[in-house]
Image 1 (tube, rainbow, N blue to C red):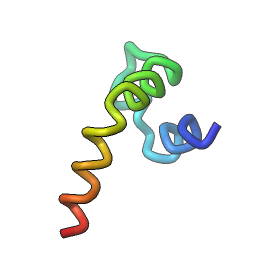
Image 2 (image 1 turned 180 degrees about the vertical axis):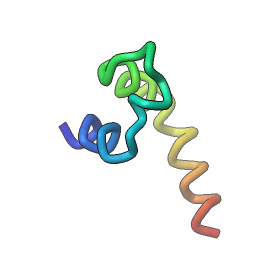
Image 3 (image 1 turned 90 degrees about the vertical axis):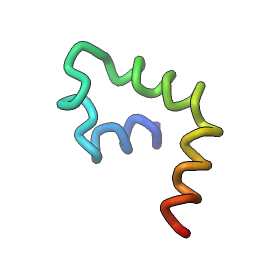
Image 4 (image 1 turned 120 degrees about the vertical axis):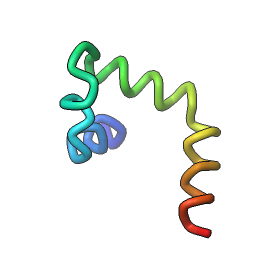
Length: 44
């Protein structure tokens, strides 16, 4: 459940009120590669 914990810690449910935690988790899982690339750009 680390992914769901991150969703909760970052208050993403408030940003996406029409979605569920499961919706956001699946979206993040499907887009993991893009999210990793964006995180690496932020570190540069």
